[in-house]
Length: 148
Image: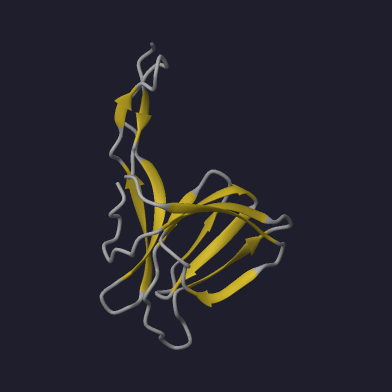
């Protein structure tokens, strides 16, 4: 096996709720990687997030789609497969993501403020945004960047 290189640090955006019930976004990193082999395969970097029940949902958001203020249905990893989309949190932070980028949506339990609760999101450009979500069957955490 060749040198696997340094331990990875993979960025993601975390949409979370602070103690006042306001949704916010923070750039975080997955860093809890271990170099492990699977069967006879060479070792690879794995960051195991724990075992819990989950549901995988594939979503196709049409061109021009906008999801007005809403909360995620459950804490969920959201991976952009193709196309582009944006997410705006209650604090005014707006991010854009494209293929291969991902976020963790955990804005359940927001307090409505000035007509805002949770987040808004929508597609960018002339093609649909195709997303894969992994909805976790667990309650939200109120700690930003807790997934490492």
